[in-house]
Length: 378
Image (cartoon, rainbow, N blue to C red; front, top):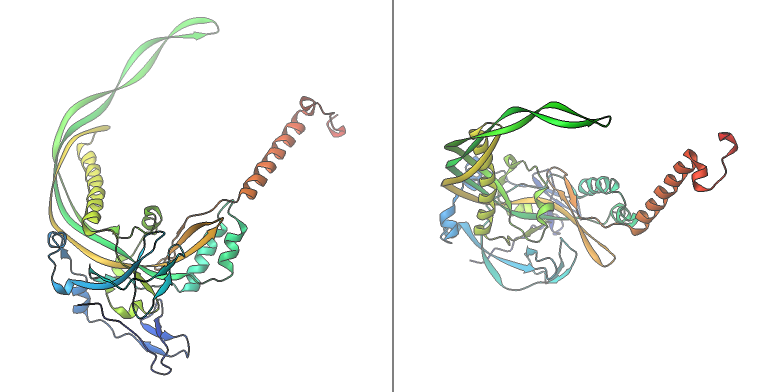
């Protein structure tokens, strides 16, 4: 069935309420009224954090309660897929500031099971971004001016997958152990050839094989293609212990992005990360001074997943016709962003360095520059 249209009218004035970051209440910007969000029962949270069977998810065989139809629109510039509620027909992309006209169709998605609510307010997130921008060398002055003017950041819940798996791996390889040999070499000293002894390191290789096991829990994969992977993946760390059951009240006044990375693609990325960790386990198990890995055969079991939403404050800044994006972790305040370079600041820095270099040469040897020595050097 289609997603329900949620509204949160203020009990006093009828204006729309919004979620207050860091709290469990909704507030009215118009009259200041506050309404508490009903606390979640432990059983409700436990059900929300329950893992879903990966094989069923990949077959699109989940139960109806795990699925939902959502109204979304895609950004024509960066590809972000933003979920829409209410009667809105036009909006602006929260990631790149491109105007978007909303579609009327719906899509069948895996329902978010849990989310981490916003902890930082918009003003706290902007302050974190300003501090980060202030440390950027050679950035245009208008960049910091943009942030200081107090233009509002957009709060958006970004989709992520988490994956669990139990693994057992068999490997073959080689263990390398160092040993040293002494050899005689000829060297030239004061025009004469002399013989000297030197120690040379060698490696002796031995066959190695064995088994390693590792259980993975909550391997996090961003389910959005609208953000550069470097920016989204470096918003860590996230405290997933703060996950709470998905409740639409936490989305009041915020936007939510629909996932654009399918579950199958997310699982492949998670497997690649797990496989890299397994290879490190194999190296430690082989031991020695060096390791060669010939083959790793991994058995996967207990594969499960969750679909969760994590809070991100975003800002888009246009400079010389190009859009630059800035992200603030809405839980911890970690900042990541793309940054423009100021040609004038770079040119000025080059000129200053050149003058300093010339000044150093003049002070050390003015005659080399064809200039008279200053009186104080005589």
